[in-house]
Length: 169
Image (cartoon, rainbow, N blue to C red):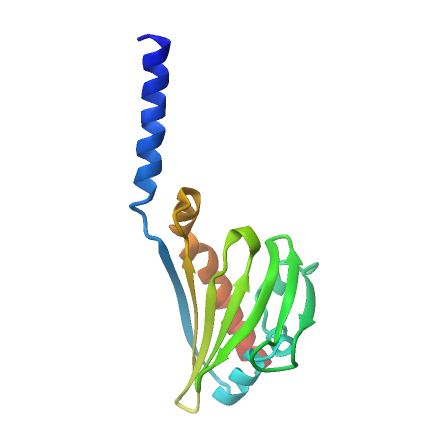
């Protein structure tokens, strides 16, 4: 095999590998739910406030040095916080309040802008709380590979957050 053939074969391999990653899912959905002993209204009021969110923020459990800076109104649309810690930095902002749900936009800079929702519905004297995230991995082949592991990476964080939420409420 000549050097040109070798380089051509190597280039073809990487083209096929790159094109193959585009067959991976572009959209990622992670969701966890729990029934907790709390009033759904209280859950939603905590979730709709940058300060209230800190009472159950699951990232505080794994990063005691996590820096949080609140911004916007105390509660409601526009309420949010900046964060910087060992798992990254960015912002989380309340973008919508819809009856039984609080919607967020998380800006992770080059890592993307996933949307997150915390929903609380009455259930047997408590609340059924569903925490979900949607992310568009775009056409970036590395991001699409990372998307394959998102449920295993983010799911336990949501579970921890749901446990924290029950303790806070």
